[in-house]
Amino acid sequence: MSKFEKLFLKLLSGTSDHNFSFLDLIKLLEILGFEHRIKGSHHIFTKDGIVEIINLQPKDNKAKPYQVKQVRELIINYKLWNNE
Image 1 (cartoon, helix red, strand yellow):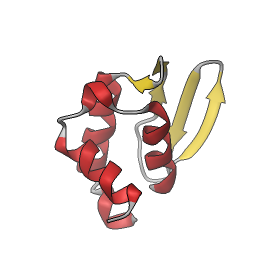
Image 2: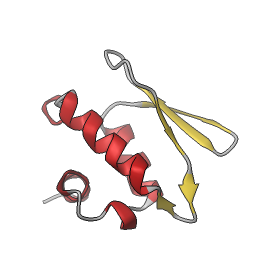
Image 3: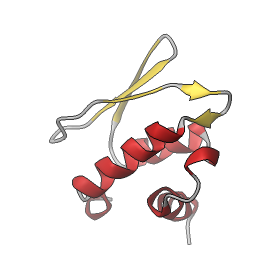
Image 4: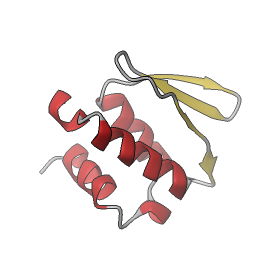
């Protein structure tokens, strides 16, 4: 199982929202085809065909739990695992 697959399963499981690396979340979104730009401390992700814009900010080296949940819900709603 690749590192991407492990990260993807960790995200979808919802058991590690408080302990998800910010850099891992960025890597996951980039692999899923999101465009990434940075404005100050805001990391903004967009993707063609997806209305929502993902705006992430790190808390220390971790992703904020509510933002991990937002990414998970976006992946589930748009069935992004089929587009890998």
